[in-house]
Every structure is written in C-alpha cells, then in structure tokens.
Image 1 (cartoon, rainbow, N blue to C red):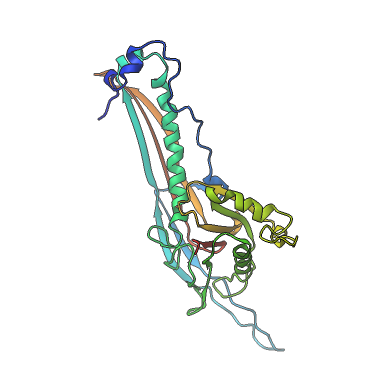
Image 2: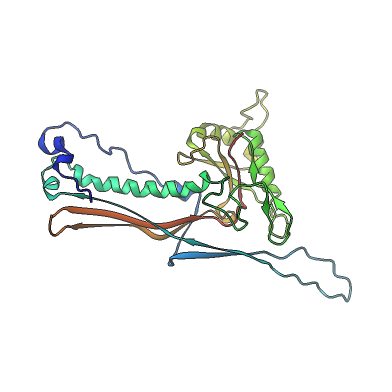
Amino acid sequence: MAIMTRGAFPVITTRAGLKKVYFNEYGQLREMFAAVFNLSNSDRGFEDFVKVSGLGRMSVVDENSSIPYDNAVEGTRTTVAHTMYGLGFQISRINFDDEQYGIMKRMTEALARSVRFEQEVQAWALFNDADAGATFTGFDGLPLIDDSHTLLKEVGTTWDNRLTADLSVSALQAAVDLFAVSVDDSNMNIALEPSLLVVPSQNRWLAAELTESKFDPESADNRINALTDVGLSWFATPFITDVDSVFNLADKSNHDLMFIWRLQPETDDAIDFDTKAMKFSAIQRFSVHFNDPRGVVGSLGT
C-alpha cells in the first residue's frame, strides 16, 4: 500500500520559505449531473424495474352494447445494482508533522475533487453511450437514442428519437418535431415538448445563440428565431466527449434518466497503530440508469 513519505516530497519537507506551493489551487468541481438527471435514494443493494403498458383507444359504444375491455401488457424486467467507488491515501506521521505548507492537510480537498469527478464521469457516460448501448439499454434492449424503438402493446410498430445532424436551427426544429409525434406503448400520441438542450462545452456559444437570439442566427434578413417560442434552455458540460453530440430533453418529470444514490459520499480517517501513518479515505455508491428513452431526442452529428 502506497504511503507518502518525506522522500515523496523532498522540497516541501526540507526547504523553508517557498513563496507558493502550486498544488490543487483550483476550486471544487461544481455538480453538473444534477441539472439533468432525476435524483433519488435507495435503501437496497439493487433496484428492479418492470414495464407495463397503458390501455388502447376507446371505442364507440352503441346503445345497449357492452363496453369493451382492454388489458395492460407487462414487459421486460430489469435489475440495476449499485456500484461502490472508493479512494484513499496515507501519509507518514513524520511527513505530516514536518512539512511546512499545509499540503498534506489539503490532500483531503484533492480527495473531495476525486469524489465529485467520479460522479460526473459515471453520470455522463450514459450520454457518451447514447447510440451504442454498450453499457446502457432500455426496456426494449436498445440504446438511449435509436430510430427503431419498439412499442410494448403495438408489436411491429416502432418510433424514432435519433437525428443525424449537427447543432443548428434545422436540427433543433427537427428535434421539436420528433417530440411532437412521441407515442406511448399503445401508439397513442403523448405530445412531449423539449425543455433543455444539452451540448458539449465546445458548443455552448452556439447553443446560446440558437436558443436566446431574437432573430434567426443563421439568417441575414432579420427573420425571427422561431425557436424562442419553444422555450428551450441550454446546458453545457465537458463530460460529453463527442463534440458533435446534441441532446434535447423534456422536463425531468417526462424523461427517465436516473441517478440513484445508495450511499452518499462518506469520508473516514484513522491512524495506523503500528506505523502512526495517517489514513484518509472516501467511498460512495450509486447507479446511473434509464429504462424508457421517451423524453430524449439526440444526435451524434453527421
């Protein structure tokens, strides 16, 4: 097990009067994933989910005729286990006592940054896997965005939430149109509306222009920007790795992107009895998941 001793930091422990130690001077990473995911807590080691369809359309009932009855259809059951993440460090007692700049004590701040960083990487991995489905798939066994999602009650019928376009006015309009024709598992229209545009950090400037400009940013003749009527807000994150990716999300109540806490970040410290080394650790346990891709329209660009 690695222990940081005086040999690991010879300048810090032997030379007094350094003007400044350049170590983790940046602030804590802000929490990004909570702006997009539905957060919840769990008191179990795993979570079970099962899909049940709604009912179909009503029928015309003639005078003195019986009312027709319909049945809901039960679909696939999925199980998601929560993953534990942990990290720690050790410092020899001599190194802890003798270094002059508080660096060893500030190692706990670096540990806190590692905790936050892991949350973000694991959460946004769902978006980075959106079209491949190598890690995340829904009830229909398909990735988050696909052009052939199946319907539980209408076998043989499919629906589409995937575009092939870079971020632009026409791409956002096409996404709005796909939301408008969203259907449930009985193939009945549910008329969802996009609420949030999610893009990689490199596209934040274009996202702001497209959603906030009064006039069409792609036109020179002062046409109005019809997208402003949709009321889209935007969110940019550096954790989406494909710079061409574009995701449109419905309000949180109308999409199924989940971040489930089993154990909020927990820290601990101790002193090794024999060596007197100082030990510090942090653990957290959570899962990231989706079952129903409705409420999401995405593109990985052209």
